[in-house]
Length: 116
Image (tube, helix red, strand yellow):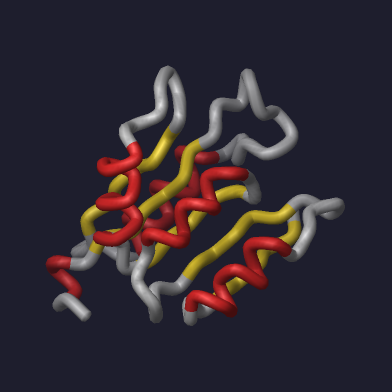
């Protein structure tokens, strides 16, 4: 693992206009709190709006991440590009499935699911 100064937290941002049931409505507050608690870490954001990045750029982003945080949704399918050992924090809805929890187990990524 990289030293703290070189670590990256990847935050997945969903468009609240397109995905009101899965978007984190207080996304900016979550980002502020991550920056407050991890001041030496670089913050990178993955979003698919207005347009998704290329597959190569997306995989590189997930591969660089030392921590991945975001709401339940298709963006977590990109975990297959991440590194084993990278922790994942998923904001879940009450009706959400366990698909990404199972995926992280298979990929060797520590997982925390937070129900909202």
